[in-house]
Image 1: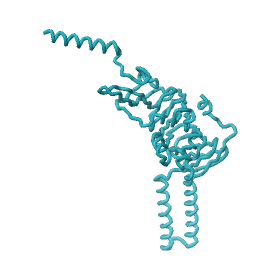
Image 2: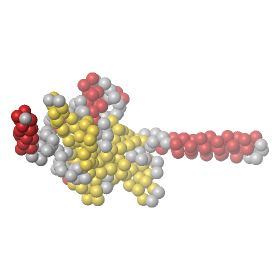
Image 3: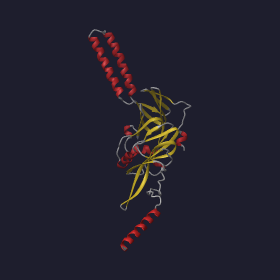
Image 4: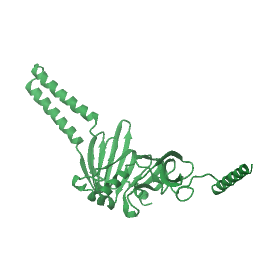
Length: 325
């Protein structure tokens, strides 16, 4: 009987100590009971994410009316052993110092704007690039950890892919990006660290500062790429429609030849038609080939037709107030 009383007494003492030592039953996070990068009310995933290189990260520098997926550091005690990981959460309202989850989408609202830093170290000199997004924009972030792995192993992994679904972005490449390119021997390939995609354009960054704006009016779409420093290469994706057009033209030329054999058209008519179709195919091929856009110029992709011309003197540099925050 005495043993039973002792066991009950010991259990009550243990429970009391546990409650008073952690009255809210909150799991312990980095920087105290809450992660400094997060806020209450966000939707948290139960999956713990392991990050091999925590110096390689994507951070919010400044944000208004912007949402996205963020990471929270979580420290737990498993069988007496301290275990550290990250938990993904959706944030309806991003704020400065939030750590964004790579490969996910960032969105801005009607009055939104955001500055995002891609960092591969612990100082300002380790910022490889800054993205500034304007209102009503959606951007798919790159996979930055692949680059950090390549830097450690001195591997050339090619380019990180960044997708601008809608809206506008300013890309400001830093000196660190040029250093990484040289270390990974990418200068010989005449490519940058990143390639930017819209639904209608491919923009190859060549260590520079440039903006992309995606606009649509009815069935007409236009991408406007403006270069403020350095240069970029712009091309049109080789889509199924491009392939279909080439196949259709080849079939038309075969039919013309057959019409001549059947006596339906004369030799002069055949030569004239073949010349016209050949020129059309040359024009189509020229539109698919990339164009280089130098500093002070812009490239407009209107329904697959690329046009390069100088930037207007009254150009709206909407991004200046964002990157200077």
